[in-house]
Length: 444
Ligand SMILES: [Zn+2]
Image (tube, rainbow, N blue to C red):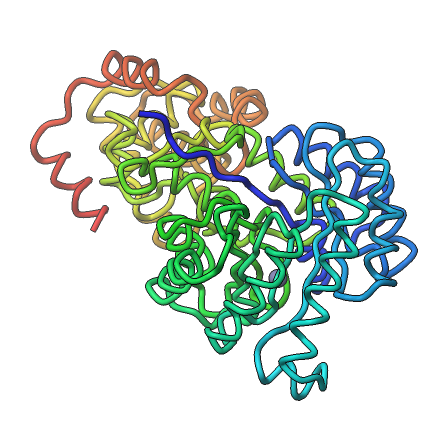
């Protein structure tokens, strides 16, 4: 069965860049745009040309150099903005003018101080003007989710008639709930005249942590474009996260039978580049691309992971471009992971020795958060000396080489999962019932 193709509209360089601490200069934006191109984004919103000289130059530079994706520029619904956006975009292979105008009563009364009638005319005139420059025009009724539905349909009717090719429905303040947002998209499909000529798009903010859920609900209801950002950056609590939306579709095609042009192996590199460029770190437990997204510390998890990664991973780290999953040695780690780490440090132990080391390891791990290589080497030395197996001092000789060969804090499996499993079976006899139980206790 052919899957429905979803247009991925990346607004990292526009909405994302508006978030505190995330502003970028022209060179930085250009570098990121190249990565978004490699990632396979269909549309790159490069900026808001009238906002500043820097924004204008960045949009112009991106339009001139990034040739595959559509390059969009944002404009308010007025001639000055639209003309400026067009000046910046005209060099693009596939330019798009993106116009927005608030439609909710609260925005009309307090921010714009215009009537509904004036709003409707302004939206229509703006789309007509943009259409005279460029065939690809997107319109966003800002604060759509708090707009009176009947009025929203009227505005959308008018802009479709004026030639808008994409109707983007923003949950500007992150207020909507998934079922509700899905119903709104569905009602737009039923109530707006000529809607079949346009693509419906979703643009969700994360104020209640529902941006991705709302975006997915919109796709299920018939939206065919989704607006999102790398790392979910954006105004306030951010926008819908591109990597989460893409991987939700990839991991659960039974629920979301859609495909995108995104090359998922480029997700982690894109996330890293953005974070390095802005200096804004990604939270460690961030879904898909966070430092801990593929880290396993609990003993039961580590044991399962080493036997078969599918026990605890619904997607592989490699599929999103993370070099490999990480097993963190901490107080919840089991004997299995400890044994493998010792192997990586160059030590082979029989069952009795490993038991001994494991006991000391547990005592130490209770005191410190992460047991690092040098701690482990010390433990090995003490234990083996106590057992009369090695003269003190031998461990130090291998320590430097071992520490430089293996990461300082994390244990990274160096082989692909299948080989790691084989290696493990070869080096460790099957754990007896007692050991299994102990691993399970640590995993709870
Ligand atoms: Zn936004």
